[in-house]
Image (cartoon, rainbow, N blue to C red; front, top):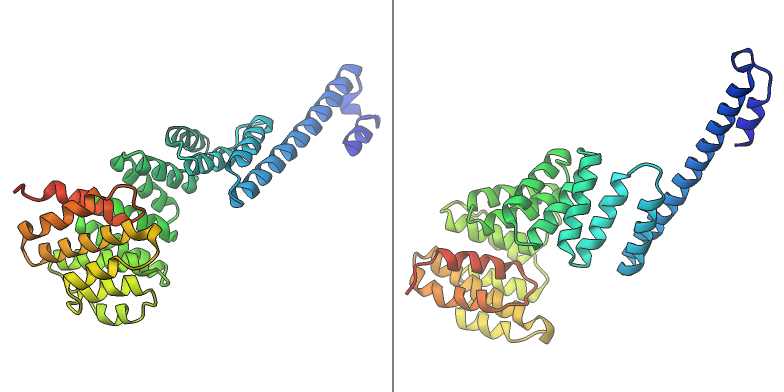
Length: 294
């Protein structure tokens, strides 16, 4: 601001009358005020995301509210950050609204499509979520998680071929992908009657005993009874997850072997274990809807 004021009072033939000088002074003051507001907004936004990273969602939301209010012009990034915080707070409707505002300001902000897709998915609107992930992929084609998320949604829509294609892309972009996506991919390839590759070597490389047990079962090296017994061991807080997964994969093996009647009780049990944190719960619900009733 000091430089601007110094410039204003140097005689200049372009601004010789007093009205022009007053106008330039006001413009300089307004520019300085906007600059201060821009910095204030940026500081609040940074503080908000720092608090989000530390798990302080209420503090993060308060800071981002202030960032959005302070910004001289609407900022898509701040609205998108708030959408992410609202998503973590399970306020899906507000998250969708903020992400939509961010997209209206900057239609090329891929992260806003991704956040809106996650909120739509958690809100049960799979079709809208798939469309947003597709747009996010178009804008950020090298961002692996979008392919994984969309693959899971396509699997939940019974689009096995589409899901496999996304899982393949996810793995190609993120070679360190964990066992879960490889289990999903293997089952779908078997359901599609396609070559599943060297899955045995993949399973042998896993260090987690539970996922390795699932892999061994799918390879025919562990019985149904042994898998169910293995599901009973482990941390109590994840017991429902293991039971859901065990029953889901047992049901899937029956479906692979063209035995839908045998699959149904296992798939039904997996789909009844609400409150789990595993994707297999959603997959089981999709499968149950397509199985013939007894």
